[in-house]
Length: 158
Length: 110
Image (cartoon, rainbow over all chains, first blue to last red; front, side, top):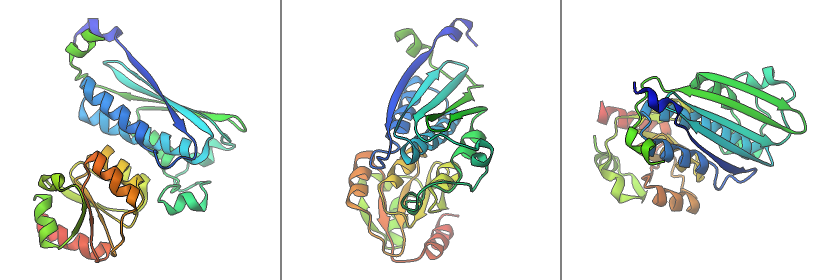
């Protein structure tokens, strides 16, 4: 692979509104389009789409507001979801598949199945979660781009 | 098999996006839990669900699904159709239950 590309980085961040299911998923859609535009390979895009969607839905479902940040290099996509919300008291419990504190209203829409955090862990290569009860939660994930299928032409233009 | 063939053969009522009827349906996925569908559906799947709200469109779009079939005659919410039109995701309705429609599509495409 071309070494001179390894320092190049694309970064962006997107605000996510808590409680607004009307536009839930829009940020994940934007991120997917950006990665497609850069020329990231489909397997990475699929995994990033899953983890960003879950992160976005968690912010919409639980937090007042939040932000999803992406940092893309030829080697990996880093996704960081930071929110201002209730935080998580017991992270180990929250990580268990099937555990959820979602409201009945959220569950009726087909969310709150207790799969969000476990999906994020499963479909990322590295997963890190920190939370301060009463303040908020941060989830940091890395999805490695082993094939590094990025078009050099794009990176030369930014 | 093209989505158009499935729509015709199974008398699905198209609610949105005639342009999407030439999509190739490679498989299917049945589910009402969005986390399950976002994780386990595959590109080109037709998604069979009872969820009628607009968030199904985002999931279908993110996973490049071939379309969404709402079961038991469930009508999509107006915002669902609006969003589907914007994203170009075909939305269809059948009076059949999920098991029935899944079985018939399975027979058609495999």
